[in-house]
Image 1 (spheres, rainbow, N blue to C red):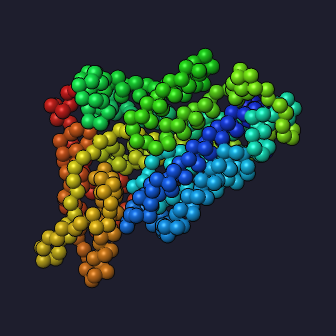
Image 2 (cartoon, rainbow, N blue to C red):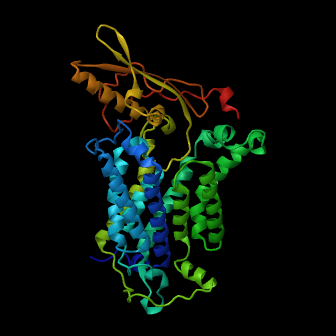
Amino acid sequence: MAFPTPALNACLTHPLPARSYVLFRLGFGLILGFYFFYAMYSGMLHLQYIAPKFFFTYPGFDWVVRLPGWGMYALYLVLGCLSLLIAIGWFPRIAAGGLCLGYSYVFLLDVARYQNHIYLILLLSGIMAIAPKLPQGWAGIRARGPSEAQIPAWFLYLLRFQVGVVYSFGAIAKWNSDWLFRAEPMATWLVRDIAAPNSWLHSWQGMPFVITWGGMLLDLLMVPALLWQKSRPWAVLVAGVFHGTNALLFNISIFPPLMFWATLLFLHPHWPAQLLARLGWRLGKWGQAEPTRFRLPHWGLALLAIYSLSQILIPLRHWAYPGDVNWNEAGHRFSWRMKLREKTGSVKLYWIQDQGTITPLNPEALLDRRQVSKMIHEPFLVHQLCQKLAEGLRQKGVANPTIRAVTQVSLNGRPAQPLIELTANLADEYPMGKGNPWVTSLRPLPQAVREP
């Protein structure tokens, strides 16, 4: 079957130097290796995945259970070693596939631990698992001339596309009134957590708007600026400052260095060789000759199209649900929505017995402090906890338990309001795919709060 057009065939299959990808692979592996080994050394692994008594699960994945403590440490040791294999280029495709599968297991253990950088790691490692075969080690950087390691254009374009999705949908997610016209939650964080008292950052009322509008425009314009050759060096410089600032101001783990390193994929594939040449390092020939002709079968093109379309549609799925996604959280995950909401408040659970007796239920008996705080953000987690508590009541002989939640939650400085309908029996199961009908609607913003 013929390729759709010869021009598209040539565009996607023409060979490119592998140097920039090999260097990305090196940084990716080192960042991940540091992350996994540090998690074991610092006790973060124990705190997150061994100490908790209860995990919130993804719908349909409650069969994914935690390994014993030694098993979790063994898994992280393996993941750290796989990351280093990726870095040094030894069996990198197998290592990337193993990393993707192993970290997917960790990812599925606890939905309350969802973070965008974990999702990005899974996507990038999955793409790296289907990379073309390259010489072992760092030959892809050092080889030149006839023995220069090469990759098909579609592979580099796919990596760039994935990184571009993060920037682009990060900008689209900021197109809301709180971020653009109230500078929330940045205004709250700036005063409470970031700026020193009496500093100009703290006192200048326009500073939050500079940050929110600047962040939105940076995300929106980053990909076009990276694609245009004349603006590309400046875009990389701005990206470095942006991600460095985020690393200093916010506790977002390895996301800033990972995103900056991935941003370098937009540079010309020869840039590592050009940089080393300017430093006076000569690149010798190393490795066997690599083929310069690549093929992309029809089914391969179809898979690329399906994957790309899914990465565009999934972040937009929250529009299929009624209400504000920052309030009801329906469609929040997998959508590159970052630092857009600040929720404070309380959640109290009660068992309503048949005779009218009201018995308080204690979430702290199952949850740690972070899980309780996370539950205030997400009504889905409240419902899942109530399902667990109802299961315990049924085991004690209560046939049809009734569990209700009394909630008062504030979003981005608004007056607190109920998050969950008081009449909803959270011991009942609710159909998936229709949002959360038992979640209240976000009330209109009062005029006094609306004005900056």
